Length: 342
Image 1 (cartoon, rainbow, N blue to C red):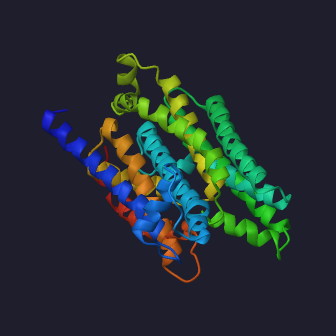
Image 2 (cartoon, rainbow, N blue to C red):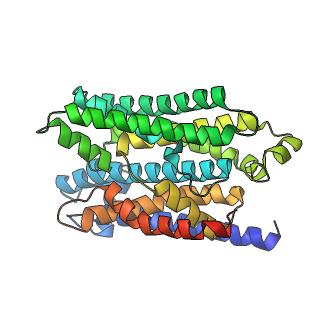
Image 3 (cartoon, rainbow, N blue to C red):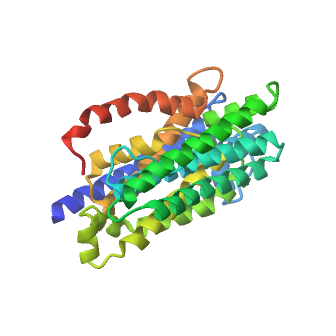
């Protein structure tokens, strides 16, 4: 890459970082109880440096126990879904691939629905969703390896993922059918719409390790994703173990997706929209695409969550808003797919 292009890409990365910081602090101010910037800064800095309290306990509760966990969760979930989508798209060389392509979202949805049906506590519901998300992709991978033939492994894996996803979606429908329509069914339905309204700091702590670990590995592998763009044979000629690389990328993308879905529910199209926006801004070079996607995913979901909290008197589930925003973009992709993609 020419020096000028590298400088331009680095400048864009810095601008995205600045935009993320602005959106981070703006999110504290927005809500049913708007707060002034000086109050927000004082309360937050008091957690680091002892300051004489000049604010009400209610304000501190709103900032530290309600908005802070929600903002951190939005950043983690947005970054995870967007980066998983970018990684899958690069690995499978398909612009229409999203994080749920191998069944992880459907598996996590079934796990959460089953946990709610069995009256598990919130932590157990998240763990069940996480476990079934990983299980769904494990089943997809094993079946695809078992039935694939030389030169067809990627296609078989995608088709197997669609089948496994459909199977777990049917299981979700079965759980909803037998659920109590007065209590359990509404809880399952609301979870499937996607929301961060009930997220706590403990939820963020649980999800942070798998998400940050998976993001770190994908960030370190961004050079290899560039090589895979040349094709499998060319990558092998350059000394890349494509089978091992594919397994690591799939494992990390699945891990961060399952962890994200376990605390947020199903938030549609983030993993499809944001990678394309990042590619339009940064180009196809994964050296810059991965860090840009991480930040743009966080910015995007923070912005959508702010809309969900402020757009109407009653909070709108995130999955509904992202679907409304993403549907026209998805249509645009369908229309322009024939023009090629890199």
